[in-house]
Length: 196
Image (cartoon, rainbow, N blue to C red; front, top):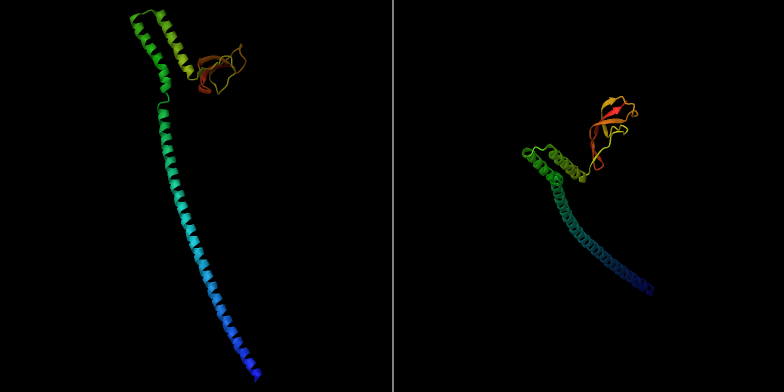
């Protein structure tokens, strides 16, 4: 009998222990679920905060992009306008340099009507010619030296071929029309006669 009592007590104790274990297990599962729920909720809140930050940064970058595009568009319009004005008034300085030459030609023409002295008129026109050459040379105009030079199709335009015993073959013998450089660029090639 004593044995039965012990077994019964043990059984009850085991039942109590199993109940306690299940209860504790259930409590632990609930806490684990709560932790999972809390951790999921925290993750969601964290992700929402990060999303809000990313949206704010994207909006800021988009505004910055729009401002840059507007600035670039304004810059493009301004440079286009400046380019048009530069092209339109590119000859202003050259024309300004040539105005005194024009004035002197006008004076020479009116002087020739009043005083028909050919020598004085010729000297005046010669002075005006030198003034014109000076004004154009300031702008970078240079005369090509062609006579006696080997023929170069980049610099010379051959109009005639002539027999010449003085010059070797393919040498410029005579200049029909002067050629000019504008700075380093060929503005107009020389019209020349070339030896055979």
